[in-house]
Image (cartoon, rainbow, N blue to C red):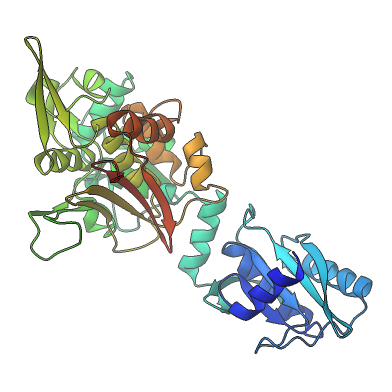
Length: 426
C-alpha cells in the first residue's frame, strides 16, 4: 500500500473492512476488531489513526509496534493469526501501522479472549464490532466446514414426518439396495441413522435437517425456510402485478414409479412418460419456469427444433445449487426464483461457503455447505458427478445458447445467479 492509497482509505472512513485505532489500545480491543474482520471478509486496521480520521501516528517504535501486533494476534485470538504488517510514512514524523487481515480466512469462527478463560466470537456490522449471536456463530462454523447444518437433528420431528414412499424409491431404485419392510420402524430408523437422514440421540432417532428437506412429508412444518418462492413479472422490475406467483413446498426430490427413478434421474423433463408420480420442489421450479418462459419452434427439414428462452440444463443447475448450498440457518427466507421480461434470477440466502469465491465457482471449485443434501441430489443425478455444473452448464451453456455471460453475484447475505434472455444491445 502506498501513501495515496492510505489517504483514500482514511478519507472514506471506517466501514465493514476498515477500522481506525490508536496503538496504545488494550490488546483485547485490537484482537476483538481483528476477529470480527476475519469473520467477515478481512480488511485493514489502521494503527495511529483517530476515530475521526486524524492521523496521530504510532506511539511505539516501528519494530516494537510490529512485535506487539504479532504477539496480540497470536495470544488473544483463537485460532491465532499472523497478519500482514506494513508502515507508511505520513509525514511530520508520523508513521501509520497497517494490519492487513486476509479475506480468505479458513478457520472461522475467530474468537477473542475475554477474562481468564472465555473465548467469544466477534462479528462486524458496518463499522462496529460486537459479540456474535448463537445463530451467527453457527453460520461461521458452517462457512468453515466444521459444522454441517443439514446433519443437525430437527427437534420435535419423528420418522412419521418422512415420506416412506420416497425413501423406498431412493434406497431401492436409486441406490439399488435392500431396505426394510414398510412396517419395520426399527429397521428404518437404524438405516436412516446410519445414512444421516436421521440423527441418533440417546436411543432416539430424529430426522436431520437434510432428511426433512429431501424426504419430508411437509418440510415447512418444522423448517420454515424450506422451499422456493417463484414469481413471474411482466416487466424488468419487481411488480405487484405478477403474471404468476407460487410458493413451492414439499420435499426436494420427486417420487417415481418403481423402476422409473433411475432413467428419470438423468435430468429429463417432467412428463408422465418419465414415470413421475409426485413432483418435488426442484421439478416444481422447473415446471414453473417452463410455464412462464417462451419456446420458439423452427423446422430443420421435417424436424421441429424447440428453443427455450433459457437452456434447461443451466436453469436446473442454478435451481439445484440454490437449494443444495443455501444457508439453512437463515430462518423464514425462501430461495427466490424470479422471471423478468429480460432475465431469470435465482437468489439463495447466505454468503458463499468459506474459501469459495465467484472466480473459483466459474473455474469449477468444489465446496459444499450441506454435504448430505448434495450427495443425495448427486445420487439422483440432479447434481453433476464431476462437480463442474457451474462452468459447464451455466457459464458455457448460456454462452452457447445466446452468447451471454451469466451474472454470479454475492451481495450482502445472499448469492444471485442471473441468466440473460438476450445479449446486451451493441
